[in-house]
Image 1 (cartoon, rainbow over the protein chains, first blue to last red):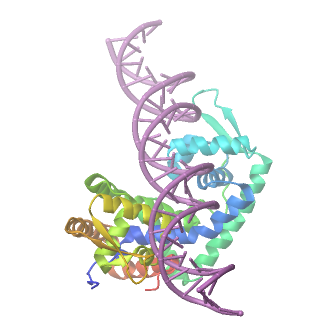
Image 2: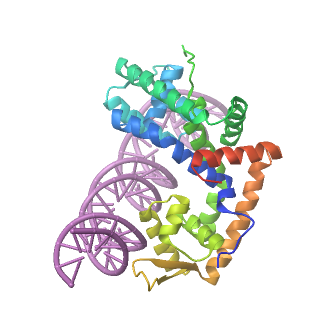
Image 3: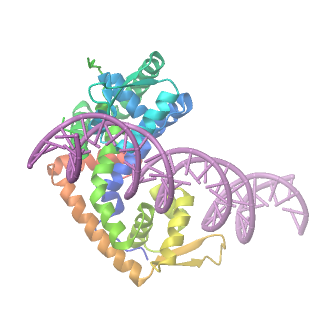
Length: 146
Length: 146
DNA sequence: GGGTAATAGTTGTTTTTGTAACTAACAAGG
DNA sequence: CCTTGTTAGTTACAAAAACAACTATTACCC
């Protein structure tokens, strides 16, 4: 005796967002995982460095709202695999400037291309106006000042 | 020297969706965690049983696209805490029918109320039309036939 | 019916996360 | 300078997720 209720799970935005996020991430996820053995936070860090150039772990964390612990680990692995180099800031020896190596640049360009293509694939389900509205609303919900 | 690129991380739908999902889940997450000591998959299972009544683990998995391992563990914990009861299907002894206990019902009603209120809070940032469009697009991306 | 495959659910093991405590370097006020 | 506080980043330990192997039961089909 399934009772119908007025508020279903599929009506709940956090649930919908989570499911949509998982679903839409699958293809790209398996790409960077198989191709570069990267984890989610690793490609994110790589992406930031590729997009904005040299920056510190803290900067990345603030921009992407990733916790410093995750960044620290992602940076360690990326560095170990020679995708990035780290150099201490001599004027403030607590921070490190991170930057891509040529291999890192190459991986970044490749991943950016893939991401753009997956993104297009996803967005193509909607009209141009809908798409823009969607992005705007998601930025709102994500707390990203656009 | 930050070089501007044509495809930024914040343009990438999977990234945006993930961030929006995380951000929007925070409040509800800490509610069910602190109030009932539940995990994400546990409240999801509870929600399904509350909404649709008795069903099997497999049914829940299909509807919510949650892997059977996660459901199995969520069910074990919910059952151990007396939120649900399990009974074997005598016509197919492989499956178990799950249903809420009175305590489970109570928790479900409470959580549903909370969810509805968080949902409203989130949706109120948009107009009614925008909101409906957002839900429709998210269902699309999530692969939920609406 | 007897063997093979499929299905429901569980358990074990390995990766990843989350949380919090920690080190090292700097800042600021007296 | 020296104590107290703050900041950047790391590490250790506990919690959770991913993945694969496993049990029990049913379905298929020759």
